[in-house]
Image (cartoon, rainbow, N blue to C red):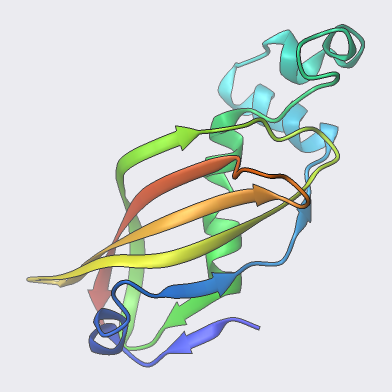
Length: 152
């Protein structure tokens, strides 16, 4: 169950803290293929299952940007913030794809609050989001992502 944070001030008080983890999601070949269709990135390591079996990872892997794009799916499972009308993606300061996400892997995200800066319309929030596969020694992706929250 997602952690509810009362308002932007309460979120600011959590700067430096880990907020928790999402549920795991199975990364399916169908999801990878749909991402390839949406982006036009049909590299064989993602979509050619037979060729990928002989490749460097022993099978197909998710696109790095597919992994990153699952942030909006995972983050609401981790936390919500009250007192805001809405939030939008603002960007990213740093993204690293550390190790691949194999098709069939169980992937989840964890989030920590890096900073909360007041703006004229609400707050700009920077999170460190870590995407990890169940049983992996290293995370698959670590990203500093930024959201603009608009006050209610």
